[in-house]
Length: 171
Image (cartoon, rainbow, N blue to C red; front, side, top):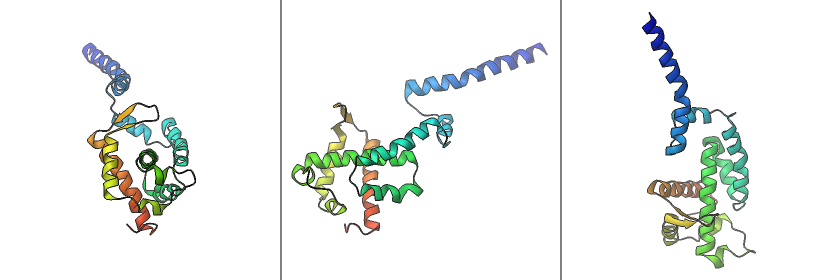
């Protein structure tokens, strides 16, 4: 009988230590556990609320027509997805300003969806090369893995698809 109580106490102790250990492992090794994902799926979670507030701020840094895109995908995407798309599009438009300064960096020139049609396959291939290692807002170079490259290309594909489906661009 005493062995059973001791066994119960040891298990309770180990269980009570498991959540802090999971938290520490997440921070040290940079992974997200299923417990954290469940917590983040709660719309009242502080981190998700902060992301929800951050999304419109990021969208303001993009050309005006991007608002239509984000409004169009809002029902079918999560806040985290829209923030990732906004971040990826910000990098894309920064690339356009550096790669094509005469066309896309003129202060008098406001980008339109039609400007997207001016881009060639070569421009998009150059963008993918740019993504492999590009400067960030903090002036440190950002190096993307294959997975990061694919996500950014996927964001751009969704962006173009939205404008093509809504007949705002022809190609």
